[in-house]
Image 1 (cartoon, rainbow, N blue to C red):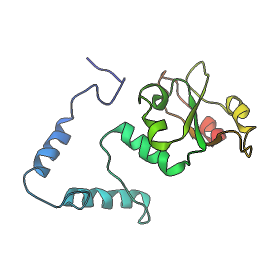
Image 2: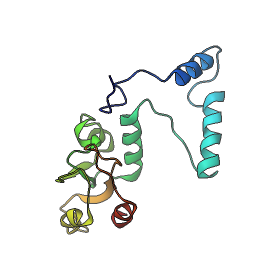
Image 3: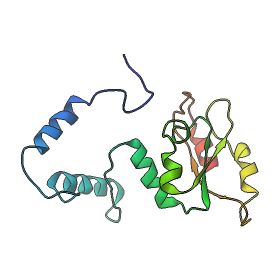
Image 4: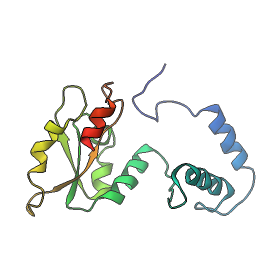
Length: 156
């Protein structure tokens, strides 16, 4: 059976399992100072440049929480589709760990549009309202819809 419902629905890929077994053969310093983590950091720097930092996390929820926490303050919000994974499948983790609000936008296909977001932008600068800061999209969406390049450009 195949399922795209969660990264936790399937077993580990054999190459990943082999890599874990290889890394598990000796003792080494923990918390990102081991040879495997150092190699991963160098590979990320090759792709993104020397001035980046990478942080290993346990799963997708952890990655989403860490990334969004780096972008947000407690009075700010993420705009996302009502069907977004961060809203539906992460059990409140994003709001707990970022201390920020998820503002959900109704969509028929899981895709955000500039016109759908405009009503949330009128509160920018009003100290009595949570301030929209991040727009979260997934491609494909949780409903299987695809954003076109122009749509992503318009949202950004």
